[in-house]
Length: 476
Ligand SMILES: [Zn+2]
Image (cartoon, helix red, strand yellow):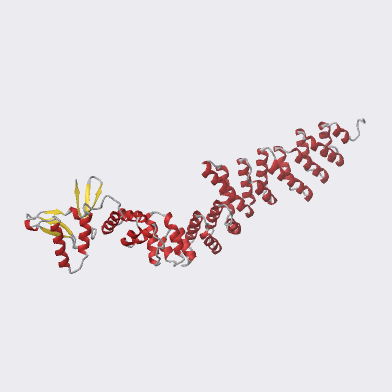
């Protein structure tokens, strides 16, 4: 072997002489440098990394290409920066080779630190061409890598990343729902990236996301769109008012409301008000509101039910079946006869009136209907039978004087006052009996005939069952 000849690369390669090949990387002859770099590739020697990185600045493009390939074959954390830098080589073929190597590292390197560093570097240099590989890699199993990829996509700033980022965010949020844990690192990064990317240019991508299969994705898209005030956005949001997920309908309606959108008085308007659970406004949108009102009835609280019924009454709707909803409908209109026809399914509606109606007359009527259906309840009065009869007499035939006379006779008959002992009846302004006035002038509450309610501190408050006037509060 000659002492001072060019190194025999084939021989060094055959002997797997990494040291000799590394030395040859510095040879003055470009073809030797290139051959040495090529021969080093399969050896993956850690000591070769630094000298190969030096060759990325070689004058000869063949040498640079061989260095890229050798570093790509080597892999690992240390080759990330040099390979990313080589994506900026003046030779397009080397750019491509370096980019291909980098993206392969990003997607397949077994070392998470390498994948993370690759993503960060791509973000740092704003590698526009890296958007698709980054999107492809964004579901990486390592949360540090996912966060780095998300940040890189934010840095590059291409709205192509909007939908994938929404999917990432939805996935992290779903993880919180199912396991109580999520990667806050990734969630926060994704939210920040979307903050940065979701401007007017992203409207098209956000609209695409509205058609996504996953409801969480659609909901995020709706919320993001709602922050962009434009007529185009309003149309898109109005289109999601019939989404099959109530959370999305609500998010769309709230977004439209914040934008100051004026709902039309048609089906779209009805959907808008239904999503906001403003049932009376919903009803004002005409017959298109009916199915929405009916469908919502079972899913809302009793106060909202009352609004739904009121809206349906306004729309002249009539219940097609004798079910619980029909009972609420008729009870709201004080059609106790209809409630009785419905029977058992009406009990809930009658109980609702009994416990919540601001009018004692309705509570008494509901208690009466419940009793007729065989349902015993703590009555809203001591003598339901007497109160019902007295109310009937008060509304009976004849003038005020005649009705008062029949009431007096009725009260005397039921020993509520004693005419012979010179007692008299004190009347409520509405004409209903309230108290008996004894001969000595003292008044006694006619408590059997009044409605009452116990409140805190053992106080019982009595009301006129006809006009709901408070008559007295007595401590027991
Ligand atoms: Zn009264």
